[in-house]
Image 1 (cartoon, each protein chain N blue to C red):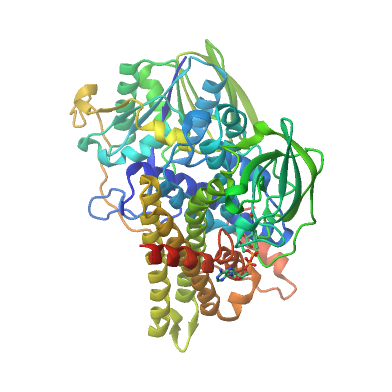
Image 2 (image 1 turned 135 degrees about the vertical axis):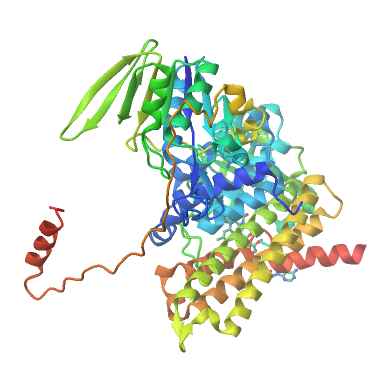
Length: 378
Length: 258
Ligand SMILES: Cc1cc2nc3c(=O)[nH]c(=O)nc-3n(C[C@H](O)[C@H](O)[C@H](O)COP(=O)(O)OP(=O)(O)OC[C@H]3O[C@@H](n4cnc5c(N)ncnc54)[C@H](O)[C@@H]3O)c2cc1C
């Protein structure tokens, strides 16, 4: 479990080459221009990155969660924003493949797998974030259709995605009254808010998704009516690992840049890396990242095995990894002095991008809530 | 149609490339080993043809140390149908003629319609192996192509030369080598990588091919001495005091660079 197999090394070599050639040279430019590179995402999809841990039957790559963690880390080393978007897209593809019936899978998984069509995960609302079970977007049954009304907030990829996986209220029974429905782009009544201006993640759009009497066939519902909250949460277990891996990749890039820089930068009569306190700082960064990565692989392994403690381990790994990534990126800015604050050096972007990983896919406070509740029950 | 693509493992050009001064061999530990990019382009040319022509067989052929399996397997990940890996300790330090003799023997043993190779590897930079293979196989060779067209019975292409371009063609079977002008190679997909280990991978020795590395009848090149590349000297700095243009022109003329 702690040593990559030959297959994993070959996968890693390919993803690294793809990330370093297709993402890394453009990351700062996309960030500055707020450009969402759908063409590059499509190429990533053709290599299998749109459905990494999805069954092969309808076009998934059939890899493991451990493979996925390694893949997202490599992608994020080049650009955390793009890696994180691919992570969200994989979450949606996996949910449709796992909870959809054969028709739904045959219809949506192939186009999502090659990322010819992008997707969005729509849970959060303007008034409801952490307490997701309180969501209010409503789907009312009308014959063999649902009519959806409500607003989703902070939706990644919105406006560009072709498929929206929406958590809606079908009954007023708390989390037991939530269902999951696929809404396709172009459905009358579906519209989007303006692109949010934000701290990081500039290379992917975040918008409101607005539903005004949106009619979708009942056949677009995944799983049973009322099963939506469980579906949404099970998608997030993997999502948490992926976003954690994105943080580790970004943090590793920041550490690698720091080591190179401190060997070159001289002060007080020699390269800065010779200062012991700086060496200790680099050691702390490495310790944070290795700790997080080790834990993340353990959680990924637990999810692959369907272990009882998978939910807890995913929550722990998400918190540890996203905190580690941001801490390391922030420390890297400090180690670069004034240059760390300049956009050109790429470090402030990593810190801006990684900051949101502590907030989304369940905030790190919610991770503690999950772990605390499990501990109290045990 | 059966295409054999020559694929070579080389030290990554991004790393330090070193020679071992005692043995005269490339120091394989000094940098990461990768599939030569020109080999990947040759493979891309073969795969592009195979994509458009079902029933085409693409075989990757490498002469490389036994430890090079994962590099050779990358060719399978990209889409080659099977691989032949000639691995034999007697091949360490093989010269161009021996390398060509061995590869030609492997090609003949397997049978082929067309051999596709890069024109020159990024490590040895000899650029003679494809031509020598064609001689051993006694088939026509089209070297240094910037474009290729393959039909059932013929291969043709464009070969850039000083001040022009030649249109060349040959009947199959034949050997061609291609240049950097060919399209970028594809990445192996996840599926390709996972399928690669299930594809046939044959390892053969010199004995299997009936080739003797120390055949006294065959001339071999022998390396007599080896020296480290001299350190680079500092260049000349021309400061513009109004005469820089002239100084620059003088420099170029003096060094026959103009
Ligand atoms: C750039 C970006 C992209 C996003 N993409 C998506 C997306 O694609 N799809 C989607 O559905 N959502 C998305 N989100 C939404 C994100 O998941 C939420 O912002 C997050 O879940 C937090 O919800 P909230 O913002 O409503 O904060 P709130 O829930 O209002 O929380 C405010 C603060 O209180 C803390 N808090 C809340 N409850 C508790 C508690 N019980 N105990 C202790 N502390 C608590 C929180 O941790 C937080 O610090 C995105 C957000 C951003 C910023």
